[in-house]
Length: 445
Ligand SMILES: Cc1ncc(COP(=O)(O)O)c(C=O)c1O
Image (cartoon, rainbow, N blue to C red):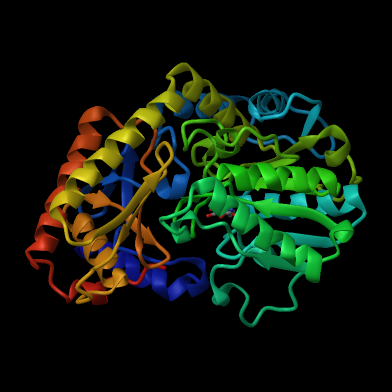
């Protein structure tokens, strides 16, 4: 770990501590497909896709070629004052793949966070209302608007206020809290009635511009909202002229086996916010909605200098082409089932696996110790650190859920290799072979 260590000490000297939650001492030197090699020559299978960014894998050859070709034409030409082909072509494609059979338009950005801020602007402008609703446990990003909507870590809000006013955080319909004796629909009704109470007691519904939701909430532990809750939410928004905004930044672009996770719920949102995987690693985000919603704000309210940058746009176009041509949506579904079945088999022999869930290649596995010797947090730390030592990158969410989100292009052999290593790690855990000292080596989030 010599070269890694040296680089990390320099990094810590120069880069702000608020910018990351470090899990392992890994410095990437090269990455291709699902494999990452570090400065000391260690190789890893990446089971988190750089936080759901490289859905087509690292450095997909066709994406690299496309970017190089565009560089030969131009890296950037202003979309603020003139026009470019890549941006226009991408806008058309995004309109095609985004749910909703109506005229749509696009606003481009660079990260999920700024796209969330853009969607706040259009929601307020279009409705002429100020109040915004989101859910406890949501992570929407780190610009001011996105932080205001988020509710997953007090450090995000600490010391930086005042944040956006008129934001309300309501309870996410967390299916993991469902009583065993009721059905999912019954649970959805109970949760939705509690949700309605907020509007009966203290939030005037006619003042709400938008409700922001992740249909599958990522950082709370990859939990899928009940379908009936989402359907009732859609109706509530319709009845009260509130915009339903779905944050697809983490689950979108094929991760769940559909272009967007909202497609699992048979409802059409008013606004779709996307980012992360769009351009396979180049900065790119977008907000899509009805023409009149997008055009409710005027120039220069969204005049980002580098918006729709040519390199990011051609990379995103190629990403869409590859996902469609190589049937990566179906592949995500098939591989996701394989991963869940492997965890179910591991669970038979393990004392520490709780709920296993997931849609497509977005899988969460809760760890818990019924004997209460170890906390869930100790368990996820032990498992993920040992996986790292054995060459598999996986991390955890909310201190208790293993996060498994590999690139959609992962091969059968690679996924088997990764799952075999994970299985070995659970065997070591069962035999109490993973030393407590690893707990001090990993901080994470
Ligand atoms: C659901 C969700 N929304 C928003 C964001 C913020 O995106 P970005 O980090 O690209 O600004 C993230 C990032 O993790 C996310 O997972």
